[in-house]
Length: 109
Image (cartoon, rainbow, N blue to C red; front, side):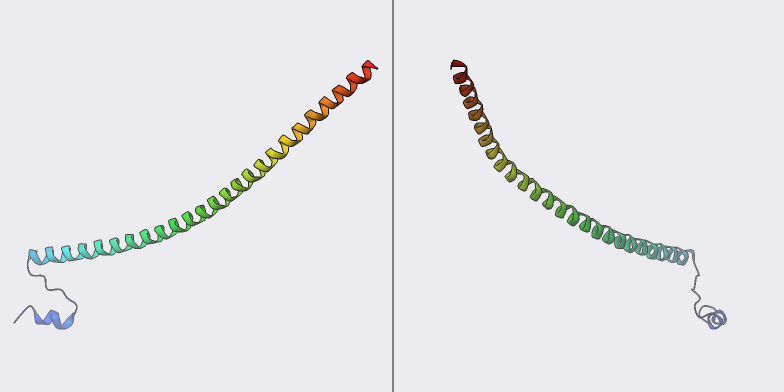
């Protein structure tokens, strides 16, 4: 008779353990299954994290593009405003010179 047939009939899921080597192989296979399970779980969470990182970088990229659009718009407005400011300053300077000359001419009269 091969491996206790009475126990085999009563419990069909029994694992035949006859030597310490069988215990070693059982422990190694259980630990390999546990390592495989946890590695697959870690890989799954890594994929979820990378998905979140991708979403965050996409959001940051969009906000940065909007920021640079505002900076470019402000630069254009300041360049136009700077040209207008120079013209206004030149006009005020000429007006001040004209008023100065006008007062000088009234004092001479």
